[in-house]
Picture 1 (cartoon, helix red, strand yellow):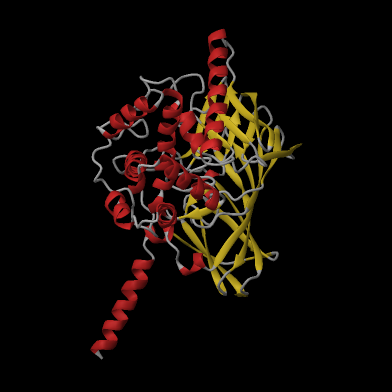
Picture 2 (cartoon, helix red, strand yellow):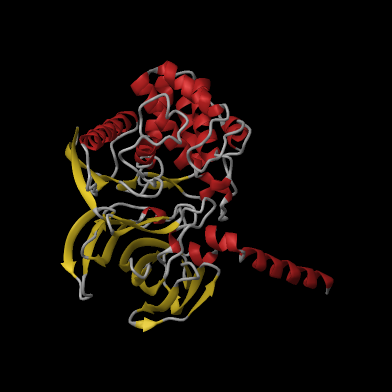
Length: 479
């Protein structure tokens, strides 16, 4: 009897632990692991005056384990109107910032299904460990200026999705119904713009033809001026788009700054293609958008804050004439967007690699001596421009626990950025052969672009290219 009681207590405790907020948010519970997302078709009306959103997302998925229930994520402050499957409303249970949908029959293995979630409300603002995530409702030139950043808290802060980094939709369509006077910029390519039945509104239809992680889906609304830069590589002629916030009193100095940063972006993309491999999303686009919030690596349309000023928060800002946010966010198109972490605990694969790419570009532009000096400065308690933290010692952890959601990843003392970058610098020195080291980076990119990875995938390539086991080195440097 005691044994049965102990088993019962253990089972109940295990179930309770498996339903903590962190695991529902960041882990692979059975209701999440049973399906693979293929496609999002998101329709959203954005009302800047009321600071509200309303719409629906059609989620198409493939069943990888027969089930009658799936988990979809959406912040609890947003109201669910209905969940529709085969023209019938389904029952669901909300739990934390997720809800569990019950189907009327068992979904068959390897079969595709679609479910539509109708929802709306006032999305949260100024949340997350840095109080920067959520919707940004601003005014510029007496017009609304709207943007979204949600890397830390997750995309479910504003739309229903499977919020698991290891499962990206293969493609998405985005339909934004917004005030007619605002320019609308989003991921991928613009298909068409139509008048909306809502008076004073229009609908912009966009398509993303590549896998994209959930927090990278976005929209920008505002008073923008588009400038295009020509980019030519071995695959042909491409356009790199820049969206500047319009200035009513634009000076010749402003114009020169714009031109300078446009050219810097083009040069940086050329550097990344030469070093790592071709940009993965030319069939969508490559754009840079000026925003009133800090930079964000939104796939094919990165946000960079001001495009007319060199941001001073970067360790090297006083030494080299580089726009830190511009090159950091563009670096994410390779590290984070093309090669994406499967788990938040491995986010150094996004931030450490992107940060290190900044320093490789410094080496390209200013030479090895400047590169070494700036890496050393970063290591020696350099003040971070990404949250105001201080990078302390090489012994700080870079990897965080997996299968749980935690702000800790971005709340650490800059480890995933600065310690991650320094780890790559130290690895380069330890290998002591730049031909091999850069072959490792290029192979990592080419092998895993448009896929999700863990640190072990990078370690495997390091071992393969050096014919040596670096497991303990990685353990010492990252854990």
